[in-house]
Image 1 (spheres, rainbow, N blue to C red):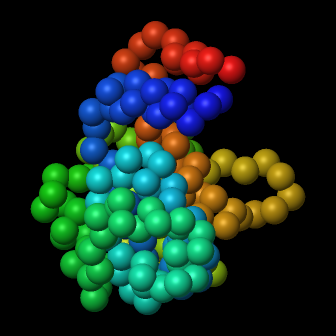
Image 2 (image 1 turned 90 degrees about the horizontal axis):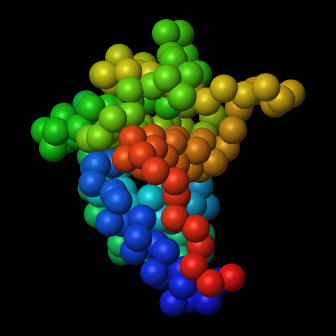
Length: 182
């Protein structure tokens, strides 16, 4: 597709998108992971990103290497504690759904992802903290059938954000618009 066709297609999807989507990132320390998360947030129209714990700095040049300038397109705020970030999300009217393979979690396809939802992801090695899990309105996990037990945090974030938008668009009914041109 030509660049103008891609812009036209994206504009069509933006018009079909009304729900608010946010993300809470807790202690994602690897700059390349945060850069990828920022780029995914910009792609799926995340309205707000809350950073907490010892998450990498969006201004770090290593973050910028994978974010490709998208940090400027996603409003983000850093909080000292997870509790403060949870309060900010709720104060803005979001339901918080943590993405973590944890006791009591429901599979992503059954998770309550109705707009307005704030997905929450945790550290690369340890996942979401007990404070985040206990403060979330719901916990979901991404079903996996392969021989590896976990996903990279940036990949898991992309899958969860995509599912939230897909669910919103599916609720509108009708088939997806076919790519223009091509």
